[in-house]
Image (cartoon, rainbow, N blue to C red; front, side, top):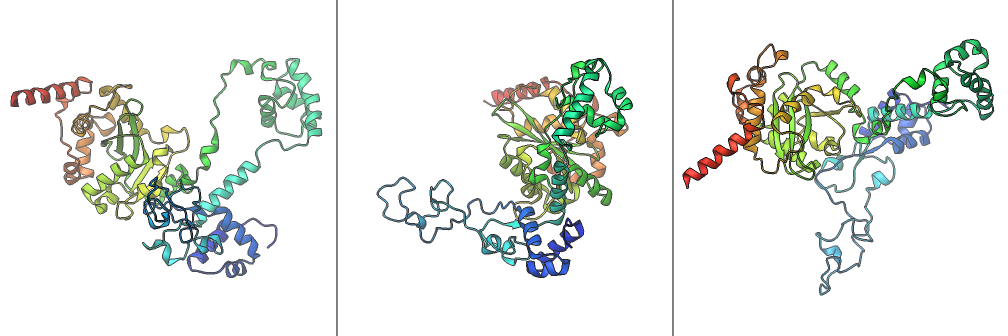
Amino acid sequence: MKNKHLTFDERYAIQTGLDAGKSIHKIAVELDRVDSSIRREINRNRHRVSDRKYTVHPCRFRNSCERMHMCGDESCTRTCKGCYEVCNKPDCPDYEMAMCIHVSGAPFVCNGCPSSTSQTCHFPKFTYDAKMAQQAYEDKLKESREGISISPEDMTELDNLVSPLLMNGHSISSVFINHEDEIPVSERTLYSYVNDCRLTARNIDMPRKVHFKQRYKHDNSRNREPFAIGRTYKNFKDYISENPEASVCEIDTVIGTPGGKCLFTIIFQSCNLMIAILIDDKSQSSIINAYNSICDSIGVELFSELLSVTLTDRGTEFSNPYALEHDTQDNEKTKVFYCDPYCSWQKPHVERNHEFIRQILPKGSSFDNLTQDDVTLMMNHINSYPRKSLNNHSPYEVAQLLLGETFLKAMNFSKIPADEVILKPNLLRKNSFIADQMISDHR
């Protein structure tokens, strides 16, 4: 089967074979492919598995290294390899990450290896996933077809034909109609050539073109982020169509002042109930710890039932899907998917609800003096505000039916009477004044 690209079925067969411990040669024979094709496919599309258990991987020289005094203690007489706190650290000039023989050589991945899931394997882990490999292949195929597809000679002839007419006031449409047989590209491509300055004529030479505001074209490089492969918005829609009963939540952050405390927010699409957790910074570890704190409060079983699917953006704080999907005991608690780049409208519930937060905490205000009790009070008021989209009920009232009282109590939520709801900054100022007054009276 020469000169044929691998299909998804073949990639799935490769993954299945690797999971079963088959050799590359045996997989190649079963697929009627040469060994080198299977080997290249695995090496090209394997991906690193995020491993939160081991932040430090062993150095390949750990048994023979004679380096000393990496800790700065010149009086120490031991070699650094005897100190775990110092050895195996990337800041050592001799450090070189050790690789498992099954990763540095065939089969080049951890699929089918029983040690890869054990507590004893400290090596970096790589795996081959058919869906992710197919997605990477399709992205690369799309990129390879972008750009100019005609020769320089044909481009020169095209320029000599089209540009004089455009510069005399003709439209691209009229040029294409009158010279369709002489133009080797489509009308849409001709517009692109002018827009990209491939021809002598420019946009300014086309009278109607200058009246249109140019749309900003976002860089699509973020579509190829490894952590989002197999977790795109399209994958999310496919998963929901196959699992319509899944409970979906959207997560995001609300920023205070630069470098200060932030809010980690979670909203349930089914009822618009929002949770907000005060975190020290907008770091990956703060987000993961906050998400795990909810899981610890209600248990992984209830968490995976109420928050079975998590939808978020591609911010760096959310770029470790494995850690978000698993609790502190490595149990899977949710499935994570990512919106497309610059498509905040794909998670409208959390974006809209942030407007309520900004009514109480205006943009630019500091969160550093807030406590979690303040944040919970704010969310009680927001969650008790009736919504037209909920048939004039509040998120709290709908959540009582869909999420249950046990969950609401675990989150310290309570209902505020509709007429007592405050969505102004003075909500927290009033609460702070009452707290100060109570402390003063106590003294």
